[in-house]
Structures are given as structure tokens and as C-alpha cells.
Length: 265
Image (cartoon, rainbow, N blue to C red; front, top):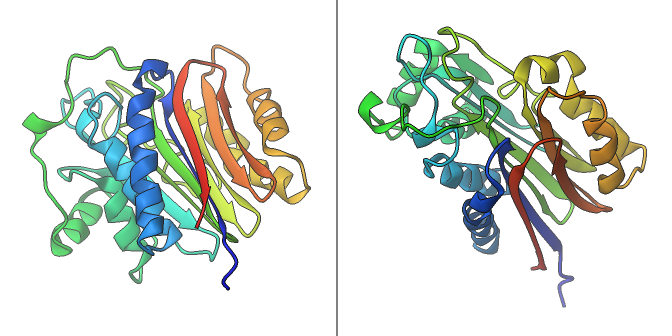
């Protein structure tokens, strides 16, 4: 008889996102769980969950992305699993699901692509395109710090994924923490972390990797969430979700839509 494995999926809609939109993060979590149930790798499941959030225009990612000051939409995304596989894109224009482009990058000879090069790569891989008319400028009062994310545990395997449309009215080419491994997200043999908030502040703290180091030291996820949030003084918005072999937790110093689900497979 095969032993069952613990499976946990957490998703968030970003620091500053409306908690009432947790129905969206819950649906994304269900998609991630379904991927695992059908035998998909943990990284693919995390990216599928985040792609679901990119398709929900209530969140600042994918179809709901902010416009830059020049009216363009440039998106960042990344993913990583505990085997060390990772991929990222920055300032990507014209594609519906940047996180899926990042996943495909992780399977290629590259690890991080930006701007026109990322778009050329996505086109060559026949990723789904989207027009400027279909994304951004939705008229919603988004927080400038929205990012969508997912962390997953599948037995002894972990993964994290993030996506964002960036800061509203930022200059073209501005990149925050999301596509930078160890800043916005991290995963290793003991767990996974996905952060959200003001990108420049998260970059300075090398936040996700430092949070992961606390996992390695044996700190429980709830204590880690409290500790890491304390590194950011308001009005700097910040939040994160964490999963480890000791459990899972999420939280923020701003309202945040997030959900968690667990089961044995």
C-alpha cells in the first residue's frame, strides 16, 4: 500500500487586494489542487493557479494589469521549485499569462528574459497573445502593490509562483521584486515563500530567501509570517504566504485576499 502524501496549496491576490475577492484565490487554489490530482509536477500546478489569477481581472496581473505612464502594459512573473528549477520574465508585453511564459523559460536553456526578448521567446513558443485593449485600464481602484502568488507543497516537493502588472503609472521598464528569485519568491527542500507588497522595499530585504532561511531554522510558518511582516514599517505595504513541512500561514499589514487548502493524495 502506497503511503499518502500531504498536499497544500496557498494563493494570494496581493497586499492591498480586497479580501472579498478571496473567491478568486480559492478558485485558483482549486485549479492548483486539480493539477496535482492529475499528476502534474508541483511547478506546473503553482503556475496553473497563478494563471487563473491572471485571468481574473480583479487582480493586478495578466488581464487586470495596470498600465504604465505611457499607456503600455508590462508584466513580470516567475516560478521556482525545490529541485532548483526556475524561470522568470520581466517587462513582458502582449501575452495573456506571463507566469506560463516563465514556466516555459524554466524548461529552456534560459532562466530570465526581459522586454522584447521575452516577447519574442513567448511568440516562438506560441504562448497565447492578448491585445492592449483586453488588459489594463479597467477603471478599478487597484492598490499599487497588488501581486498574485501561489505556494504549494506536494509531499516533499515545494514550488512558488508570482505574477504582477506592476505599479500603476510607473515608467516603462520598471521592474520590482516579482521576477527576482530570492526577493519576491523562493522554494527549497524545506518549503516555499511568495511575497507581495512594495517591490523596491522587498528587493532591499532579499525577503523571500531570508524568510526561507527561517524555515530552515525550524521556525513555524505563523511565527515566520509575523516576523517577516515586522521588517516592513507602514505605510510600506507587505504580505506573504508560506508553506513548509511544519504547516502553512499567510498574512499582511494591509487587507489581502488569500486562501489555503490541504488534503492527502
